[in-house]
Amino acid sequence: MLKTLIILAILILGLGVFFLSDFKEKIHPPDLSEKPMVEETKLEASQKEIEGEISIITVYDNYLLDSRLKTGWGFSCFVRQSLGAGGLNILFDTGADSETLLSNMEKMKINPKEINFVFISHLHGDHTGGLSGILETTPDLKVYKPESFSEETEITENIWTTGPLGTWIKEQSLIINSKKGLIIITGCAHPGVVNIVKKSKEIFPDEPIYLVLGGFHLSGASDFELKNIINDFRKLEVQKVAPCHCSGDRCRELFKEEYRDDFIENGVGKIIKI
Ligand SMILES: [Zn+2]
Ligand SMILES: [Zn+2]
View 1 (cartoon, rainbow, N blue to C red):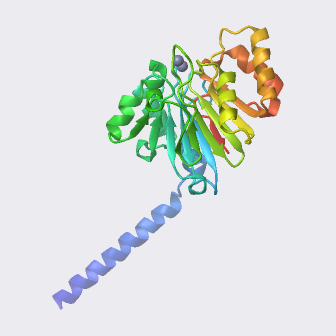
View 2 (cartoon, rainbow, N blue to C red; view 1 turned 90 degrees about the vertical axis):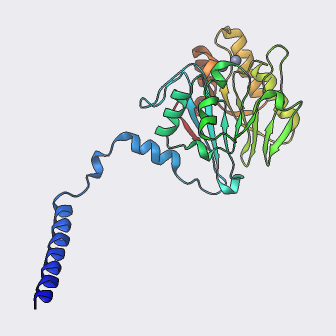
View 3 (tube, rainbow, N blue to C red; view 1 turned 90 degrees about the horizontal axis):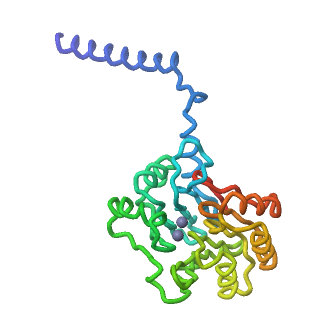
């Protein structure tokens, strides 16, 4: 008799807790409208790409596109490839410091463990400074520096390096041979951004150049020089441009005037889907 009473009491108590929790949820439904903005970026950056899609996410730059992120003098972008596009993820350069880089990556929901290899354009602190922080989280990560290659090489399917270019400062640029054409990513473009594009065209004479992105190193250039460079870009049939970092404000202005809808405003927080 006592046993039955105890079981009955437990059942009633259990049911009570169940209904109470259900009721609580009904009077306090989760408020979706008040989700912090940062969640949207997280979602956007981590969304599973459609077949064959490549996302290029600027995670470190001195130009700001998303006020929730931090800026710093330097450059880094994360290249995420869907399975259909090769499936490998690349961190291109690492900005000037680990703290800013890791914090921006976290806010954009990029886990350092997702990186398949790091590509370093050249050995200047504003491109290598965040490497130590990345290697602390993933010590076995493969890092390709300019001296890793003597000339242009296919690193992995459809991903190439121009090889180290320039005389004084050796710098390599990354070429992705995508379905839409070549995507050329430059760090500081010390060897000259036009030379880098020409070199890429030499490696892939039959491919259109879809996008040139990164530091163009033209902050001190005159309008005359800039217009010549833009002219060369047109002659080389570069379809889209996304200059940032050391490109200079005037360079960005003039490229925007010429390229209009094909000018991509680049800065930390930018996500370009290809
Ligand atoms: Zn540099
Ligand atoms: Zn730089």
